[in-house]
Amino acid sequence: MPLAAYARVVDGHVLRVSDGDTLSAVIGGRQTTLRLLYIDAPERDQRFGPESARSLEQLVRLEHLRFDLRGRDKYRRTLALIVRVSDGAVINLQQVERGMAWSIARGETEIAYERAQLRARLAHKGLWEDPRPVAPGVWRRSKRANR
Image 1 (tube, rainbow, N blue to C red):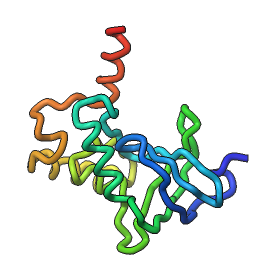
Image 2: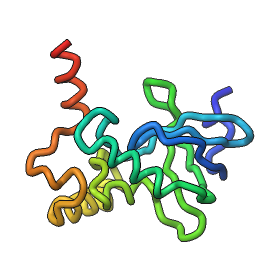
Image 3: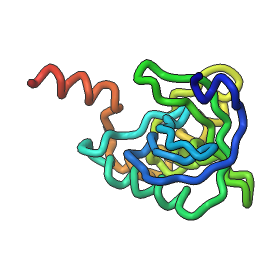
């Protein structure tokens, strides 16, 4: 049974960060790959990719975290909203605030994420240092086309 089918909000800790929007965590004694909901971060080999991954590592390292699990993506990764228990900070949103990921939020969460992205862009934070950063989806398609 998929993890998301029997648990919605669970506590856990991070084993490792894959990139700026994907990590491995131990939840209920099992290792699970989580994809951060509402954001899209640069890939590891894309410009600002290593910085985005380091930012996520800093945000989750040695922290007591709460994972709000929201189903799976097409790659079978569990989609999650990640909250730091000590202060209630939403890690997904913090990545956007730091300029380390694009907002892909829709619906009721869209306004907060879009505002965070606008503030980061206006302050030239992270990937917004580049006047024309390439979104990860565009970058992946370009990379595939050049093979």
